[in-house]
Every structure is written in structure tokens, then in C-alpha cells.
Amino acid sequence: MAQASNSLGSAASGGDFDAPPRQYNLNPLHSISFAQLRSRINWLGVVVLVAGLGSAVLIWRAQDRIERENEAEQSADASAPLSPLDSRKQVRDVEMYYGKLGVLTEEAEELLHGKPLAKTIAVVTVLTAAGLFLVAARLGD
Image (tube, rainbow, N blue to C red; front, side, top):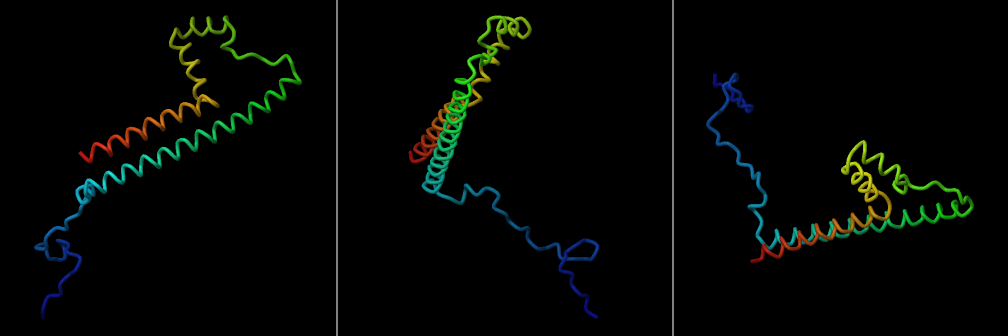
């Protein structure tokens, strides 16, 4: 009788090992032209710009609404607490315990809340998008 061939190709079942290995295209950038790559990078720049500026606007408007609500509450209560960084004693204590870096860290935390966060996101977005557009423009040369 003829021996039945096994389509699995394992060594235990005596399969066919003479078949050529499959070739996979693991680097898709080799299959596109510079014009397509430039177009994709430009689109990525547009997406980054729209998403970043859109999120900055949303954060700005949300913080504006929060500030208006807080102003309404503070106008009713004149004895509202001050920020800890408004006190010289607090700044001196932070500097004594953590050094100048601690003071800078506390001041930098202000950039991660509210309207300063929106400004930071907008600046980083514009710089990132400009970099992408510059890379896309250089690909044409």
C-alpha cells in the first residue's frame, strides 16, 4: 500500500520538509513609495494637530466653567483659603526639606492642571505636528 502523506509536515509523522519557507513582508515601508510615505506622515500631522488642539480647547473650556463656579462661591465667602505657594513660610519649608528642586517641582505641578495644562498641550501639539510636516517635506528632496 502507498504511504499516506501528512499535510502537517511534522518530523514524527514523516512530513515533507522540502517545501520552501514562507516569505513574510515584516517591513511594510519597503513596499510604499516616498510620495505615499510623505502623504501618510502629513495625514498623521493633521490628526495630531486636530486631536491635540481639540483636547486643549476642551480642557480650557472645562477649566473656565470650573473657575466661574469657584468665583461665584468665593464671592459669597470672602475668607477663601490661599494657595500654599502664596505663603513665604510654606515655600521656605519646602525649600528646607526638598531644596530648590522641590520648589520647582511644586511650581511645575501648576502646569499640569487647568488652563496651563491646555496651553502645554497646545504647544506640544503644534511642535509635534510641525516636526511631522517638516519630516514629510524633507522626504520630497
